[in-house]
Length: 230
Ligand SMILES: *Cc1c(COP(=O)(O)O)cnc(C)c1O
Image (cartoon, rainbow, N blue to C red; front, side, top):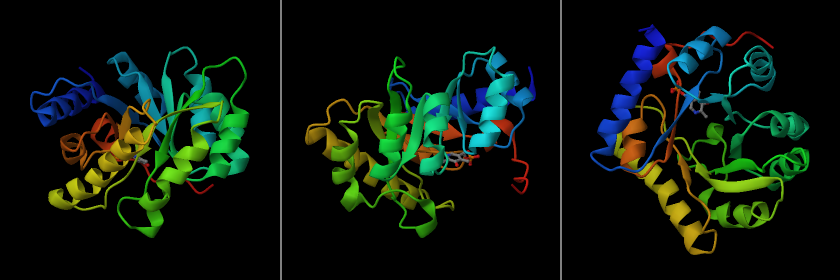
């Protein structure tokens, strides 16, 4: 078994243990930013199908050399309006929508004839200025604006907990995201089915609070090489 296949298996074991007998599905998105196409191929050969990327140019280059694989591509990075068209054309999911302007640009950029782009709204659950995401108090208005956009299919919410190993704090923050999704569903957004939360160091806390999708990089691919200057 390749090292990546072995680590992938270990992550799946962590997920199933965190579920504690619950049978709901949890989708694993393998975060491959700054990892090579060969590493993605290795994970694909081990059965992994969903991959997450943060940097558009890097992602497009890898997609080009991996076009023989049927990968579900997730854009999980920060977004600027001038990149929205390329993201909408080349990805199946986006996780980081935090303003109407980006949502609108993604919707307009989604090619006609393709299924709408699956979209999650990013909520700031950690009160850290650097993390991005809409404040919980502004979420309902953002959802109202995004839901009618024809090029998008609003699926749910994405959030990141504070760094560190305080499990109780992680759970409190993830619970904010879970409650926000329940609030939106109760207010008429019945189609929302996705809670994208949990990474290498906090996936257990996220699953305990109801994550349906976890985004895991380091535990699958090992430490990331540092990003080359643009
Ligand atoms: C990098 C990244 C991840 C994965 O982080 P790991 O700690 O390597 O698992 C998940 N989500 C987002 C938004 C990221 O940028």
